[in-house]
Image 1 (cartoon, rainbow, N blue to C red):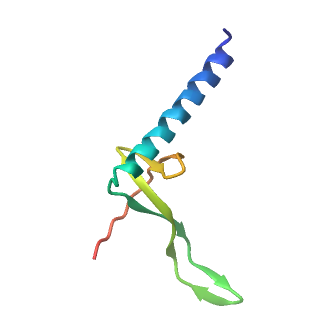
Image 2 (image 1 turned 90 degrees about the vertical axis):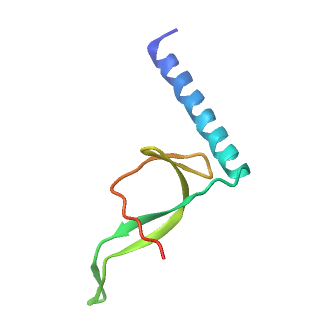
Length: 84
């Protein structure tokens, strides 16, 4: 089997495992965290807008990786946590 085919098989298997992990985490009601995206300060019609964090969704943190409920795998960047 050519290396490319093995890579495709490995990637498909990884996607399957991440999707299964997301389903199991959801079914177990595991604690999730907010996922946000940094939006830098900018001007809108000449009016300054402050930098802010925009909510993107919820994720489960697995070490340096984040898993979405849809089964997507993300790498954690710099993290800022704030709780009330």
